[in-house]
Image (cartoon, rainbow, N blue to C red; front, side, top):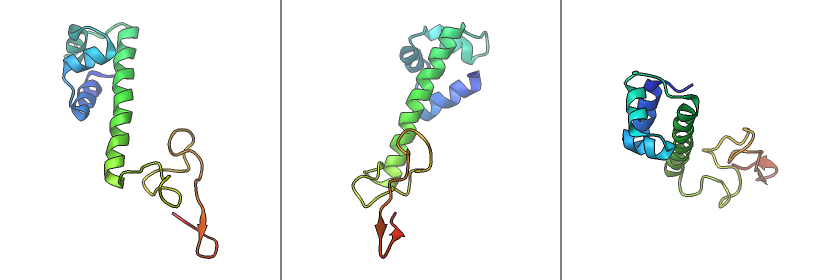
Length: 110
């Protein structure tokens, strides 16, 4: 469940205004404003839409930051194998599986 503090923090990370969140979640500005001031909790659908909008954009933001920190190819496809900035043991998403080759007499390449 999304809390008012989590909503404010997530917006801060994204550089979003309350109006930006309202637009992304397709809820009214007063819904976001009143929720973040703990005046009331929105109905389930509105709260879920706010959470989903924030989570989706935070995933994109996190991926972009990882890309900037690790270079231009976070997928690891332009170099030998696994990119050191990705967790290749995780299931699903960009880090799925182990994308490794061997170099120098059978040593795993990174």
